[in-house]
Amino acid sequence: MSTDTSAVAERFTQLYGSEPEGVWAAPGRVNLIGEHTDYNDGFVMPFALPHKAVAAVSPRTDGLLRLHSDDVDAGVTELRVADLTPESDRGWTAYPSGVVWALREAGHEITGADIHLASTVPAGAGLSSSAALEVVVALALNDLFGLGLRGWQLARLCQRAENVYVGAPVGIMDQTASACCEEGHALFLDTRDLAQRQIPFDLAAEGLRLLVVDTQVKHSHSEGEYGKRRAGCERGAALLGVDALRDIAYEDLDASLARIDDEEIRRLVRHVVTEDERVERVVTLLEEGDPRAIGPVLYAGHASLRDDFKVSCPELDLVVETASDNDALGARMTGGGFGGSAIVLVEAEDVEPVTKAVEAAFAAAGFTAPRTFEAVPSAGARRLR
Image (cartoon, rainbow, N blue to C red; front, side):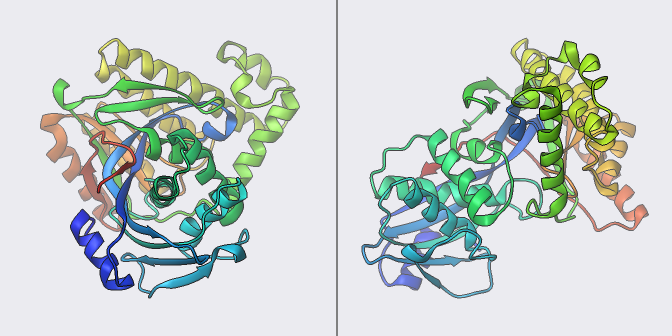
């Protein structure tokens, strides 16, 4: 499977008998800091990966939607756009067809399309493979049908597709990161009003590297544990009389927690409020030109996700513990949790020893060997041809 522009276009031609009208790309993402804050109207700080979903697309006028992916062992799926309804499709096609549904529901006249997809974003690794699929389809249809929507608007529609059509209660971060990130930067995003600030994030220039360690433990956001935590956060906000946990000031956290009797709700509230503060701290440190100082903040974020939000797993904890034992500057799980990936901030000369130490620790524990690669802040969604 190749995401090379020419190869994807050629495969489209083989499938559908004509050349595509264009080829688009949308990346996966790593979240530097700010986990489970997006559906609480809080702050997040993702950046785009070089790993991406690529789509070759042509419009249709007959109401037919034809979908194919090089990453799924199946042929072309044919659907009628007029028949698309939420949760009618439980397979991979729910992500692109959900975008078509969301666009049409929002009043945009999408009359059909031929779509071929290929992706290098690892599925189930907490790197937003589903958001990349959604955003690349949304961007292609936006261009082909002349909808004139901006990146943040496409992100909102893609989130609605995943929330309502797919049935996964995700926040807005993943889609916005895929649509709006810029090369060499992390995106400081206020998920309440989608205000954005691009924060320079060139670790290589500082002699640093950020590793992504894919534990190979698959997760699914549409399973119940993610939804339980979201519902618990909403319950906490209601108990405290605020619209969202974002509205609890960090300085008022202890007083707010004292008003909650339910220990589980208290833990969820504590994580969200302290995580928002950690995001703001990282922004300040990076803007002050002190990227090494974010390491302890990453470790603190993992502890909060492990102990308060309880979304880590033994493999993720082992990555972080091993990184700490081998002089990594910082480490934490990234993504929704229950598996997926961790990030590790290291000096450039420590990449190999830390990587080998993690691999050895996994082998000793009897875990599946992890996959480790360097995360390089990359461009967001764009047209390739």
